[in-house]
View 1 (cartoon, rainbow, N blue to C red):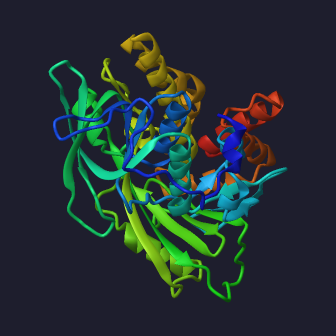
View 2: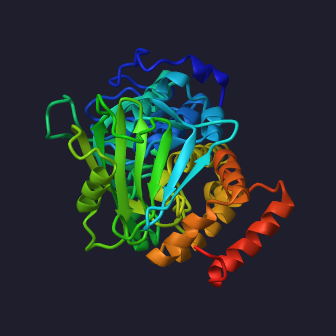
Length: 429
C-alpha cells in the first residue's frame, strides 16, 4: 500500500455514490451495471479489499450496511499501523501496559516495552477506511446484500436492497453484475453461505460490549493507558472480560460460546468491579465471532471471502482487526490475479498465503485457549505464568509484530520448562 494514504483525513470529501467507477457501465432501466469487483461488507476487511483493488485500476463497488458497529476492544498493534498507514488522529488512546487479573484477583501488570498498542473507536475507524477506499476510486453504496444469481452468460449478479435515503428503513431492490465478488460481510456471512461449500458448518462465539463515557472523576486505580483483561469464569466460562480505554470512552465487554451464559450480566459485574457501574452508557453492541478460519475461502470461480466471513479471528486473544485487514488485502490480491490471468485457481491463494503467515500462531493460540481457559484453577495458573518476564517480552514481541518471535532461544527453553511445571502442578500459585 502506498504512503499516500497518510494524507487522508476523516473529514476528506467523499465521491458521490451515485456515479460509476472507471470501467463500470452507465445504465438505463434495461441495463445492469457491471463492475470488476463487488465487495460486500464495509468493515476493515472489505474496505481494505476495496481500496487495494481500486488502486489496481479495477472498477469496484463497496456495498455496506449503515449503522453497524462490531463489538470490539479496538486494539491495533504497531504492525497494523505501519502496514496500513493509519494516521495518528484515529488513535483515541495509546495503551502502554496490560493488566492480567485472575479469579482470585491476583493482578499482573505487563509493560509494553519500547512501544504502544493503539486504541481506535470502530465507529470512526471503519468509516475512515471506507472513505479512503472511495478516495482511491471505489464506488460506495449503502444497502443490504440479499443473494447471488447468474446472468445468461454466467456472470455473477449481486442482488441487494439499496437505501436511497439515510433515514428510510426500507430499501429499494437493486442489482449489479460482477466479474468477481469479495464476501466481507462478517460472521455468518450470507455470501459465504450461498457461494462457498461448508461455510455453514462454522462454529461461533458471541461477543458483547458496552461503550461508556469516561467519568469526570475516574475511580481509584484507573489508568487510561492500561488495558485490563479479566480471566474469571464469572466473567466468561471460556474466554475473558475486558476493560479497554478509548480516550474519552471505554469499551467493557466479554464473550462466550456458552449460549446459556449471560453476557450482559457479566458486563454488569465488570462495570461494578471497575468502579464504572454508574457511568453513562453510550452504546451496546453484540455480534457472533468465528472460532477458526474456514477450510475454504472461495467457490473456485469468482467469489472469495475475507475477514470474519473467512473466520480470521485469533483464538485466545480474540484479535480481529489486523487479521481482517491482512485477509482483505490477500483476498484483493487473489481477486486481482484471477481477473488478470483468467485462472480461478488464483482465488485459493488468499487462504494459502494467510495460513502460511499466521496459521501457526492461530494453532498455538487455539491450544492455549482450550487448555488455560477451561476452568478457574487453570486460569489462576495462567495469570501466574504471566508474571514471568520472559513470557511478557516474547508475548508482546509476537503480538506487536504478528509473528512468533525467533529471538532469544534460551527464553523459549525457560518458558517451556516453566509451562511444564505449571501443567504438572509443580509450580506454586
